[in-house]
Image 1 (tube, rainbow, N blue to C red):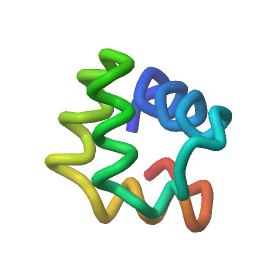
Image 2: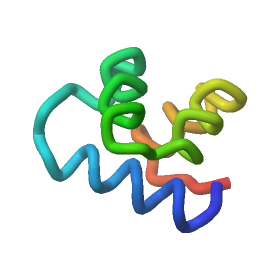
Image 3: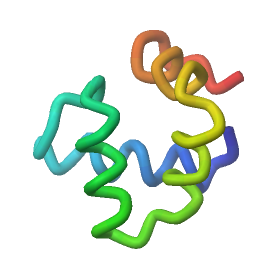
Length: 59
């Protein structure tokens, strides 16, 4: 996960708009905000995204 994707995840989390485990809603917000890198990451690496939300592990 690169710093841009992490920044986008944290920006969505900061809104408090959704539970971050609600991946479809996170994807919807990312689309609305133009976070194309995050959308691609979610499509390719949902497990890595969930691991980051649970543990903070960026690996």
